[in-house]
View 1 (cartoon, helix red, strand yellow):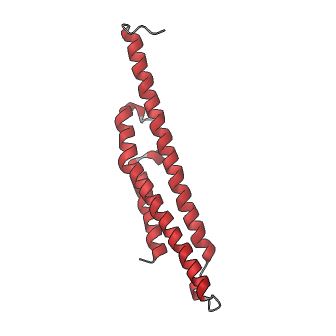
View 2: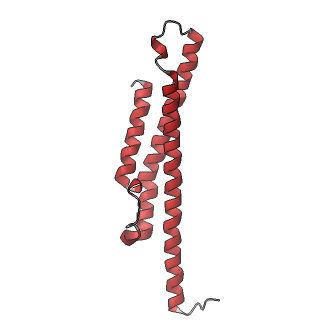
View 3: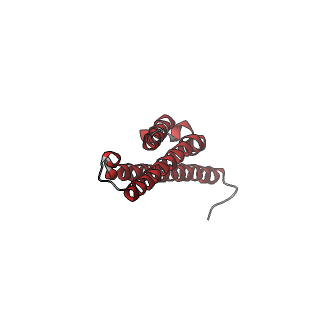
Length: 134
């Protein structure tokens, strides 16, 4: 049992809380990053699976409509992935940095830097623009 009057025990509990907070931020960031990359990869696979159907004379009107629906779904997935990455860069990572401080970030993988995630977000957003032919 802990002694609430013991300052050493109190400091240890605070250190455990900060350490746990850092892990929970890392786990949230890792989950969001994996989710966004999965959405982006799935969207890219959908686009690649269609090939160059628009230029084929043998493609029927209903098939064109189905392919267009698939392209719209892929573009929506790209947009969702970009939004998740933007949220990760703008909200989750800054809260993580505030929670653990500079010392707690020393071992953080480069993939969880704000600049890297922002770059990924813009890259995925560009994929949505290309899919929509904007």
